[in-house]
Length: 420
Image (cartoon, rainbow, N blue to C red; front, side, top):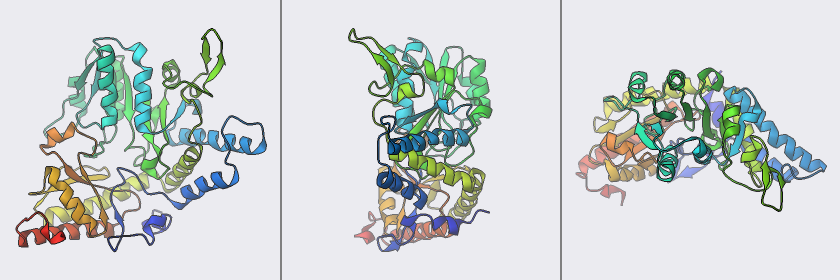
């Protein structure tokens, strides 16, 4: 049974930490999720009990490090239901994963080939492909969106064609929260003999992902989005495709032999992509974070977020007409909105005002700089929810917004002068 009050006890930062004199109300999990005690303890355990390198030593502590480090691949395999743990590459996060993939595909793409993305992608799923355009002359095209800025299967069918060799889409938008029908999109992609790579940064923490059932080709995600440490993530790929990629970093641990005549030989995937000393403690912490959310249940997490999100949306629509919601029908974690008169760059003023109530949100472009043109605003406010948020949190957000709007009416919108 999902008990949010019991879950909150596992997060030290939610138990006693104040912001502006108020109990912290954290709505910035889309940027990074808070860390449960079990993850913190697991990281500290590594540093205190067996802080040695991985795959480097022949002594007891080093063997323990190897075991704990490699065990996480099995944990990730269980999370996403891939065929083998040898399809799991450790990276520093989603950004690193997508850049590794972009570099690895350079030898298999050529001038004139088309990569298909959308206008709501995070910069991490835009800029690596822009660089490929500059380097080898591939073309970038965008999936059409409907009037609600939604990417539907029908619109995807209209956008794909024979020159598309790679489809790269976020499973869930980090701003609008739309969850794509990735299984059907993957099926259509493969009909055109193209590859599909999925940005799972926002989906892996929120919904059950089964890469075998979805039949996607690559998946990238970051541990810190679901309560793991920062600086660690995963690139998963179907093994033959993964092993065919060109290695991004070269160095210790990823080669089998080096000759003086400049010849060198690389290991197979995943190890050929993991040069140098890895983020060992972060990797081990990621494993603990995965176990934590799997024990709670991804379906339970998703249902909880839908429930409290619906509560907030209904209250905002009913009680604060000055709030513009860009994704009221989404079931994902983020609520993207503005306050009339404080759109664009001025959305930061509302974020600062909310902070005085102890409420942490994000403002600005949210690293989705193509999307701002579609929303016709240069910035918005994002309240992104996760498993530890409550109905009470949502009420505090709505009540604070009401208070801010009322104070602005009294002060006639004088740049939030009441804050000074």
